[in-house]
Length: 80
Image 1 (tube, helix red, strand yellow):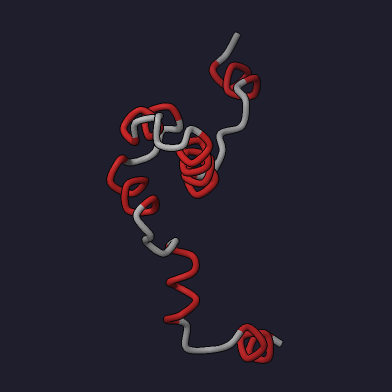
Image 2: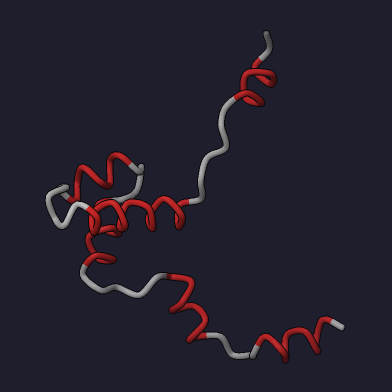
């Protein structure tokens, strides 16, 4: 069996943002009984990122929208 065939059989890996949401939800569902470090390890996310999110940090995608110079409608007008 070649390496290519083995890779094709691996389950898809979730994007980091989805894993971070799942880790945050797991921590909330455990009502703080699940240590942040353990949740970070289980979902393969960076501890400090999860810690900051739990303590109210804005997700990167949302903060990026606030810094955007053109509205989505203006971007579409330029693309056309």
